[in-house]
Length: 261
Length: 299
Image 1: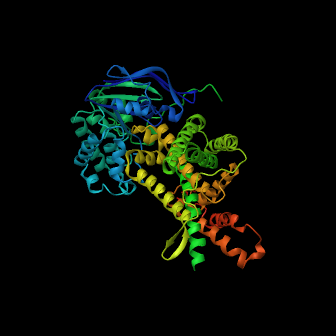
Image 2: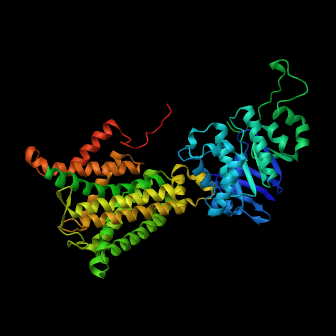
Image 3: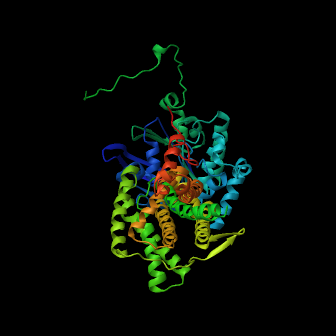
C-alpha cells in the first residue's frame, strides 16, 4: 500500500499548494487522481518521488508511507530503489539518446542481469521500441515516446508506477492503446496511480478515484460511484442529462468574493 | 617541407593536444553542471606540481607518478565540487562560474606556495630525442603529447559512450530532473565530472611541464588558451574541443615558425595572439562554435 496522509506541501516557503491531501494506492490496484490544471496532482507525485526540492518545494505536514515504511525522507534515487517508478508529465525522454539507452538509464540502479530482463520485458510489451532500439529517441512519434517513457520507468521493476497524464496530446486510438498497456502492466502486478485529465479513460480502468481541486481532495470514492456522480459527469466526463441548448443556459459561476484589491 | 611538418604540424599538434585535454575538461564540467570552470588553470599547475613531486621527489617510475598525480587531482576536483560548487546547484550558472573564479584564486595561491619561485621539472621522460616519422625527424616529446592526450580523451569518450556511469552522466547533462527520477544520483555525477576533468587537467599539466625549461606557477596561464579552444569548438562538444585544440595549436606553431620570416613587421610573440584572433573570427560567424549546438530560441 502506497499511502499519502494529511500532506501539506509548500513551494518557495510561501505558496501552500497541497492542503491535507490523503490518498491510498493498494498493492496491485489502479487508482485515478483527477483534477483540473493547477489542482496539485503533479505536486502529489513529486512529493511521493522526492522531486519536490528540485522545484523548491517541501513537505510541511503529513507524510507518505510505502507498506508502512516512511518514504518522504528519501531522495529521488531512494524512492526508485524503494520500488516507486514515475512517468513524468510530457514524457520527458532523453531525445538525444537512443531508445535502448533511454531504457538502460531507467535501469540505472538495477544490476546488469535485471537490466537485460527489463529490456526483454520492455521490448515484448512495446514491440515498436524493439524495432527502433538503435534510433535516436527524439525521432519517435508522440505515442512511441510515451511508450518509451513507460518502458523506462518499468526498468527499475517498480511495485508502484505513477503515471502523469500519459494520454496527453495523443490521438484517441493511441489513448486506447496506452490504456490497454496500463491494464496489462497492472495485471503483471504493478500498482498504478494514474493522474489524468482524461477522466473517462482513467475512470474506465481504475478501481478507485480521487478528485482534486485547488490543492485539496474534494472527492474520494470507488470509480463506479464517480462515474455515476452528476458533477463528475458534467465537469470531467462532458456528459450531462439536460443538454444546454443555448450559451445562456450554460452553467456559469458567480465570482468568488475577494477581500483584496 | 621538413620544417613545415616538424616544427609546424607536429609541434602544433603537440601543443594543441594539451589544449584539447584542458578543453575537454571544460566541456565535461559544462555539460554535466552547466558551469564554466575557470579553476582549470590552477588544477593544471597543481597537476604538474604533483607529477613533479612524485617523479623527481618521491622517485616513482614516471608513468606511475603521472597516474598518482591524476588521482590526487581528481580528489582535489571532487572535493572542490563538494565544498564550493554543490551549494550553488540550482543557482544561476553565472554565479557558479564566479565561484570557480574564487576557487582559481585560492588554488593558485596554494600552487604558488607549493611551487615557490623556482622553475621545476616533472623529470625528463622524453628528453630531446627525435624520432623519424615518414622520414621526417620530429621531436619525440611532441609525439608523446599527441599520443598521450588522444589516448586519454579517447578513453574518456569511450567511458561516456559505453559505460553505465557514462550514460548516467550524459543523461544528467540533458535533464537533471528526469535523471533523478530514474534513480541517478545527480550529485555523484557532478562529482564524477569534476574528478575526470581535474584528472585531465593534471595530465595536461604534466605535458606542459615536460616542455623545455620546466614550469613555474605562472605557467598556469597556458591553460587559458583552452578558452578560445572551447569557444571555437563549441562549449558542449568533446569532438569540437579536440579539433579546435589541434587547429589552434597548429595555427600557433605555424605562426611561430613563419611569421618572423614573412611578416616580421608584426613584431614578436604574435603566436600568442593567434588563438584569440581565431576565436574572434569564429565568434563573428558561428557564435555557438564549429561543433556546438546552436541555441534554439522561440521568437
